[in-house]
Length: 346
Image 1 (tube, rainbow, N blue to C red):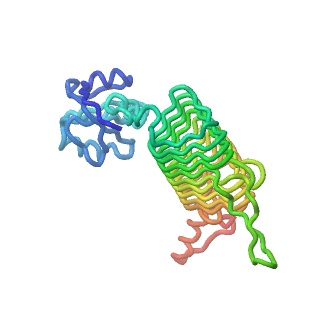
Image 2 (image 1 turned 180 degrees about the vertical axis):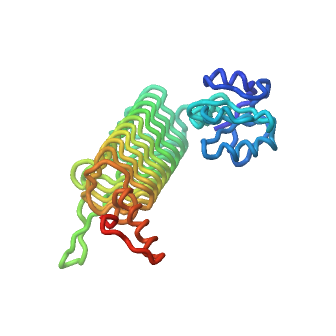
Image 3 (image 1 turned 90 degrees about the horizontal axis):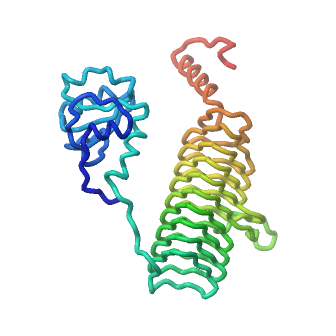
């Protein structure tokens, strides 16, 4: 994102977001900044639990504005010489200002002469293809698809309209990607799944991986993520799924729509992640398991059996968060030499 040279009055920002302003309405804002490093003419936000810390910081930087929870707007900011805007969701309010102060990076338009495009490839209107790209036979790119430098498209790939593929990605044969997707740098889609069998002659025999990957619309895939092709059939990523960096999705996995998979998650083959599931960073999911809708799995958990009841799950092996907290309370009591009632052990 490139900064815009815009300056906006605090009063105008409050009016735009429908917030309640307390302080100097004539202060100008020219950029966004983190709460930890307030700067002159910046605007930031604070969650309710960090409001007191924010006000102390703003006392040292009176030419700055901050969004706070509207429930906290009654705080005496005058004595601290702070200017705040009370809103229902401070973080969302800051995000809404991003287009006012930053413009998106736009890569080169058109088709670079160093790109290699097979004559059988179908290109939609307004396609942009960066330097060093290779697009193999029988592939198709929808309208306004953008490929940055050094993207490699294997045979038989289809990419829907308005999808952006950043540099260094490899999209293997037969993969199908929907429209309005964003695929970040060095993602590999459709590599062979990890399939091997014991073989009396060779020791280990590779299982052919002849399936593909099917990705829906409005999907975002983080940098250095790998999504393996199905052994037979498809690995499926539903529409509106958001996948973070360095995630491994095994062969024949199905992730239903609106799910969120955080960084460094590993999902083994043939799992089914139902709609709207959230999996925290560093979590591992064993093969052939199901996680039903309404589940949130905390970071660094280990899912060793299917989860068929909605709720929050933690740790290894993953268990209901309420049960885990009870266990931790019991352990602390035992460590302190206290007795535990029978009812507390359940």
